[in-house]
Length: 78
Image (cartoon, rainbow, N blue to C red; front, side, top):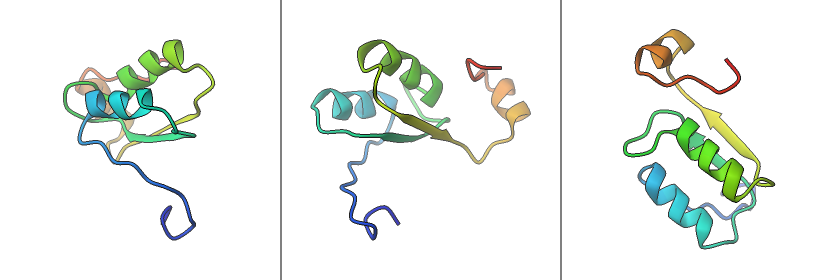
């Protein structure tokens, strides 16, 4: 859908790779899953809040909040 709307989309296979992509520059907004290997979405957002504080981050998940908490992933605003 983003491509259809004319956005340039760069993909990453996990949170560490996403961080590398952001650090190369040219990223205007980050859309990420919460559940990812190596560095989950919340951890990625926390790193980016320090290194790229102006970068908008949108996290999403197919898991319910209780399931995420069971995985040890809690949003910082909870």
